[in-house]
Length: 57
Image 1 (spheres, rainbow, N blue to C red):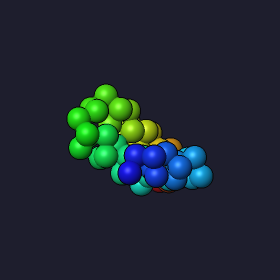
Image 2: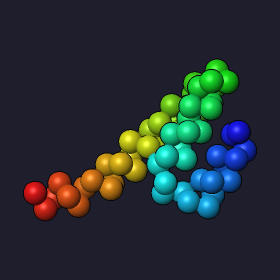
Image 3: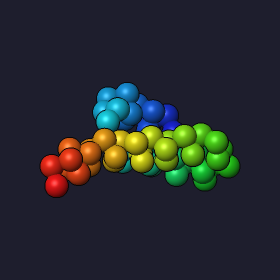
């Protein structure tokens, strides 16, 4: 499954859903460091997506 998420991230690097799903897969495998790295990517991407809306409010 992780290889599939790697491929999805290569094709759509800005899609936070792929990073979140891969993070869950890493976590399920006990690879918590890599899971946390993917979850951090999700948070950064969501902040970047919401930033223009926050500035305009």
